[in-house]
Length: 141
Image (tube, rainbow, N blue to C red):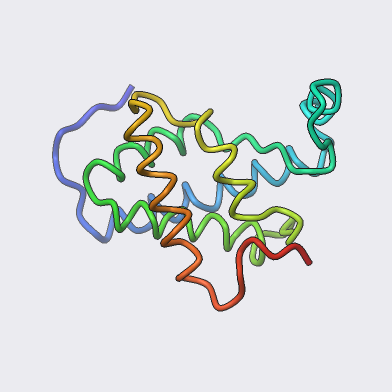
């Protein structure tokens, strides 16, 4: 496993984040389009199986926790970029997945956050991410 405590230059950080954003969005969409088995589990649990049940992945969660603790503004931007990829730019993009769907799935990807810190992160994302869009990212089209 690669471990470093060195700072990462911007010309390196940018493509790293872009890769994480694109990969997270694409894999999440791919799993959702395949008919994730969790839809059946959701139905059995009395939840709406038509509502997206997303899996953002541990790598995304680890990076988001680190960003939240080191640069909350950048954390907001990264989540907004994932939402944009999922709704507009990825080859599997769909407006059936909303910001709220992503935020509902986020806790399962976050590791190492206390409940209060997790709530603060999600509240900030719920408030700030829509400001980065001209159209409501919770609008299902």
